[in-house]
Image 1 (cartoon, one colour):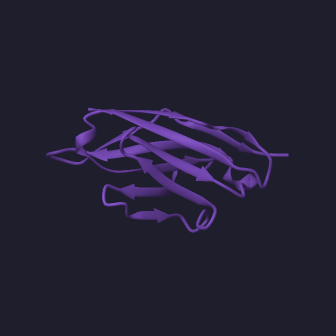
Image 2 (cartoon, one colour):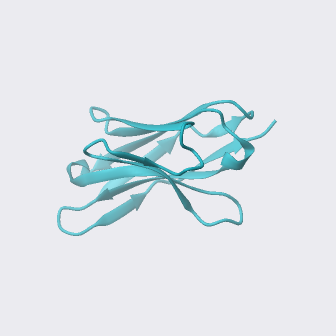
Length: 118
């Protein structure tokens, strides 16, 4: 099993920055990708960004050039640096880990609220 703990959400003004963290524990050796989704009120959960074990990253068009995903393998932690935040970035952000030595599994973090407002 894999467990995830998120931190770093909060309230920020438009144009500001936040950094989210997602720490993994448990069967971390079997993780092959991690990333972030977000869900705004009344909307479906949407993919924000992912990073694979090989370091390949993908981003939603809406965050390209503003958000950066990175990882610290020594700390088993993935980070989401969010710059130039906009009110439409307001959502609950969920970290996920894809893992499994035999069949694909996905674990979700508990979610952290990001609110962009003046």
